[in-house]
Image (cartoon, rainbow, N blue to C red; front, side):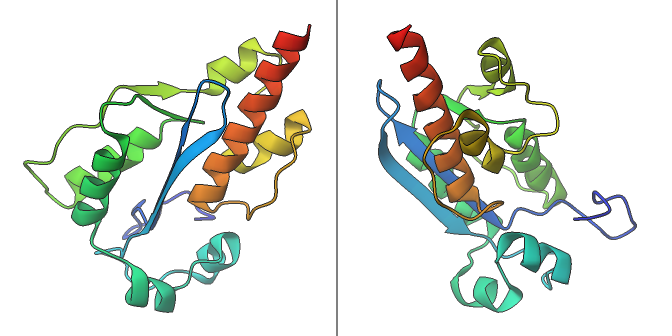
Length: 168
């Protein structure tokens, strides 16, 4: 949200979860994507719809409740560690608290990849997940701020950086 969810009645409700599983060569082996219906603010702002391409009507038709989406995501992850460009686990945990959910399985081990990229000379400051592929010159097509495409962007960037190190 343009105001960073700081106004009264605004919450960082999850509307989409996207993830990829990679093999040792950073090739995508499996993908996960799910749309989530916000409980508190079910009508999305024009800003959000323009940013993500996800609209209120689409969520009404294809979205599921956060608790169900969370369970499916944890099932997809299994015992595999989760990594993201930032602390996406905090947003998931915030939604669990926001909705007063109990009895959900904990997330697997989580890593913030910004340090990994910084160690490989990609300054993460000011970047979003969707920026990574382009930043390192990786071939990637997708929509910025789409959770699955953002995960694909990160994977493409990681593959290019590891390939450069192996070639050096």
